[in-house]
Amino acid sequence: MAQQTAEAAGGRVFMIAPTGSMKPTLDENSVVTVEIVSFGQLRTGDIVIYRNADGFPVVHRLYEKSNGCWYALGDNNTKVDREAVTETNLLGRVCAIFYTSADPLNAAQAALAQR
Image (cartoon, rainbow, N blue to C red; front, side, top):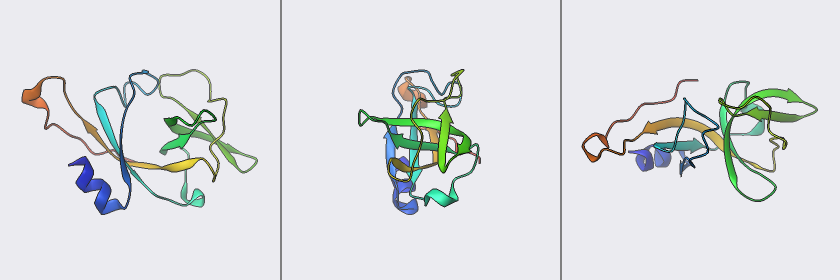
């Protein structure tokens, strides 16, 4: 289902790493579909994915725009990320969240993100 959504949105699918930074919105049982958007389309509260300086993807919520950059914050974090989200490192905006379960009987459960 996530792959079909990604294909329809012209985006990609990402699995959430078990860091806990986006709990309760996202956890290690979540899969997100990311749509490609221009930097100018971003708004406070959007959940985005960007590449940090080490090259790893980070999925956090946009908190504040300053000096042409966005600062993101994990829903479960107390401080904004050290690195800003820029046109260069932005990979996309989360357009759907699929909650899966460790229980194979409930693996088909899914919910769409609300903006």
